Length: 264
Image (tube, rainbow, N blue to C red; front, side, top):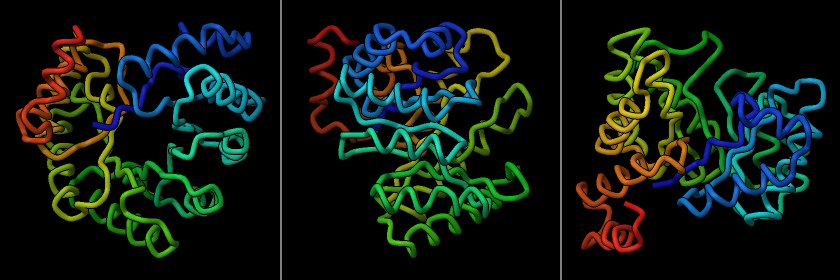
């Protein structure tokens, strides 16, 4: 499972002051803890600081890499900020979060992907916003995979995002996301599938419980990546157990190791 650690995000009230004050120690410690807990990538987001986002995002990239030598997930709507972070990136593995089928966004982000040889999260979203049906999402997924591969990307570097919406705003949103994942896995077996997991529980109580339940269902449907809190021990335990149950952990080696190490 590809774990994209979500903790270094300027929208999180407890983290925003550390970014605002250039608090290197707080950022470094959270990066190290997430990597230690099993994160594959560390997502960095400074989007709340619109006026000087490029400077702050580049600073975050430098601090995270110095602290943890961690592969970055560079999360920004601003192509200038993405480029600034890529310029200071030193790890050969790097993920841009994200691209869409919207022509302006696609044309802004694609050159950065190709110039810096990055992977990318591809959101199944076009000019009409978030599609409401599985069929509409799959149509956009096909368009994104086709256009990215024609530009020179390999499917293994594309992380399709099925778009997880809160079930609090639509009872079928969970089913729509899960069916989209199933069809993506069948049609694009070489791509990764990754989502923002916690969207499913927005505006609900006991959000961790809902996130954990959805995670198990999504892994069973074919998802192999997620933007999550790797410091949530229970959630990480669910990942290891789920992968063992669906045959992705041969002889349960990872599950047993995590148990012996006290991580589950």
